[in-house]
Length: 613
Picture (cartoon, rainbow, N blue to C red):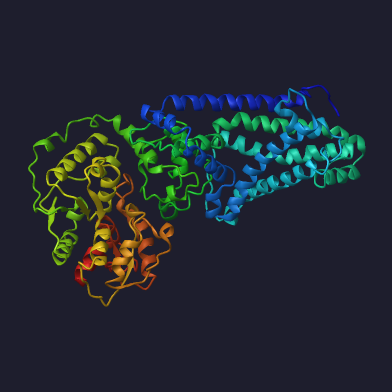
């Protein structure tokens, strides 16, 4: 034993101790500010659900995602093992180390540095501190487990493609400091414990075996001289990592845990923003998994606006309108994110913040809606809302008219003669007052005409009605996209179709993420579908490039993204591409994959069904 007494203190533990105090002080300060700043409704959700089964469910998710990293395993097993070995391995080193220390010494005061540097303070003890249990062996196995993760992290940074990633994130200065110190912590621990084992002829197979090799390779005095500096280096690496952690990507380690609990209590981000956003923003580890799925990166080679960089810039107060606005909001980054960060709402709240800086944000430009003439027609309880893009694609509107007539459905036409936008384009630009004014107008229209089912031909409108029109559910109005409604008509025998002698490939619009089977069911009744199974819902959704959420990309850039989609779909052997979004139809139609000026035949699913009626 090198030092006795309850504290087992040595000056080399000072860097580690300073780091621990700094880390927990910074984390508690950040957490308290964010919790205090939550809206009253969110605080009420926390109070109401704290002592409930939701907390147990959240605790389980913490284990599965923060330690085992289940979602990353599903994305890439090698990446999953890397993250798990670092997180779970280090956690177990702390837990088993604490058990080891508590088992061997019984002091009332047992500060953290004792079990972290246990091998230094107790170098000559036998491998087994409790009969039939070898802590030294277990700690060596855990150290190997963690070192495997460190090795894979080095490989990921140098050869990311070996880990299934074409791109890795670029780091801030604090990220680099934290990353370098993290990479050094466990190799330095291995070195320090091995030197100590070599000097004192102790340890288990890994550190003890390495210590024996070191002792055989160099004179005893040299090895003994290395021991103290090795422990100093290990302590300094720990201290530097802990001090830099709250200001680096690794703050996610202490932020993802409360984020999981808050989400379990149904706390969500808001378009107008709240301090809950900070839990999401700082839970991003910038692992880079969101980079490759982004079509702006893969097709346009623009590599500084992706979710990881958007969150980074917003976190440090460097966000620009270009980064906030250059996004298709196709949802692929959100789907890929192992933390489940709500990228869309966070980006929207940033646009709202920028929009508030302009003079037109609260301008009463839509007050005329209060006196706008009702131009709707029809008396059915089924309402059809075409939306702006369907109005600009009249063939889709005519197709729906034919389908409704064939099925014998009485329809209330909300905007066949012109109407008011659903408001989503204004919302996506950050102008919430304008969007909310449109929502109030349309909601009142639906109430006045007593519709019970609202069908829309536009996924943009569908998403707006289902996510942003809060009163529709309370009014008992069921909202369906026209793919869902047509599927119901066919399944119920109300719509009879023939089979067309044609082959189609189906394109999944981004805004219809989650509606995967219905359009394929419809097309299976009217034609040959070359991608009937798709590539799975997760892999089958590819943005056409023409998203209304994009506020910066020009037509050429949008067309370049769409070209990849068209080529992929035509490679299935299809003659025609079918989609269920008027915006996607327009975007894909302008692509000429053969570079000979030939336009691609693109049809809306309603047009195909109308042909088969």
